[in-house]
Image 1 (cartoon, one colour):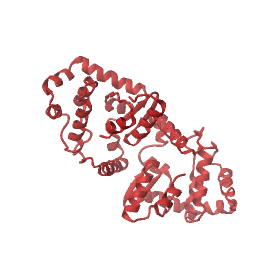
Image 2: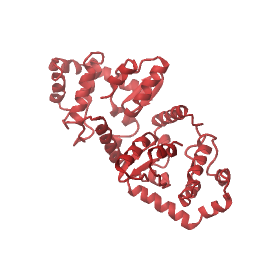
Image 3: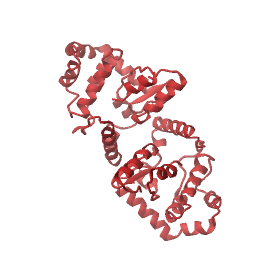
Image 4: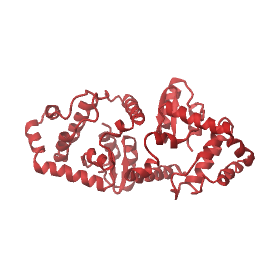
Length: 183
Length: 183
């Protein structure tokens, strides 16, 4: 929700690389979100997120189900990562899940996110579910893991990794001072 | 290392409540630091810490052993929490561990931290190891756990919890805007 304006103001280019958290968590022995596995920490994280959204006037409603399966949405974002609408699409999916408490594993919800941007949703969804698209997301997830990524969002600036919304400013500052684009 | 100046500038009073992380981690099923249990995350956390210290000009050397047993130092900080020197003592212990790579479980190192502040180290160490002192730290750790604390540093501002160095500013801002002292 914050990155576009800040990146533009800093003059840093963003290269989106969607990946799946599930397999990366799985490798750490987690079959669920750490928010659920560690309840004391999870309770805090939800409150922290709520405070942050309040401060930034970003609509937020704690989802009644968490985590939801975001594979289809991730396939769309991954397959169409270089399309000009991909960031708006990603924001629409996050808004559906975290502001409207909608079931983003439902193809109709993903379709609505695409159509809301004036896109031909059915055609795009079909392409995003091709064997090539599935393979691309798998490969990108494996690449993320090989880079040492363990959570999202992660910002790669050259070889420097920054993790989390609260490291966005540092990532952009690093990119600017080292004259490299973020990934 | 940062809290005193910021708290003073914000006009917020700090009430130190030292506790042990070990029993709190133990309750989450961890017998070691999560930095060690989750190596990908651990590797990142050390680099993150290094970058933060560099940016703030705080001396930092990754300890050759981690975590070290800080029970004795915690007992001193807990028993003497209301003494005017307790913050300087805590900083000296953190500096010994994280800048000089010294073995803070060694009573001589804790003694040196006390003596460096011009204090009668041996007498204070003896008091900090009394049955009452041990019980106070145990009770305070249990109290921390009952408040939902799962890591350190944690800042309690009324009933609002903020976790981590990177939430210090928010904690102080919350205290100021709600007119309450931090704990």
